[in-house]
Length: 73
Image (cartoon, rainbow, N blue to C red; front, top):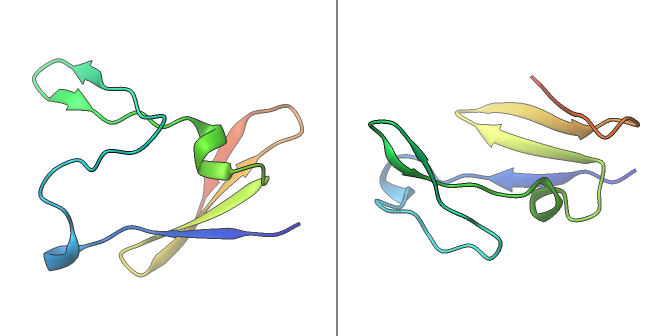
């Protein structure tokens, strides 16, 4: 099994606005405006696990045998 790493920009490198991403659909939460929505297929790209780096920590997003998603630190 291979693992993909997704690094999100932080601080001065973070974009000030949402970047267009294929497969994204806007959603709305009361009082917050548009919220980005990404399909799990787009994130995982056929793999069963994805590592997300956030503020120096690694989080693992895993697809289970029952097609459920689990996020662990």
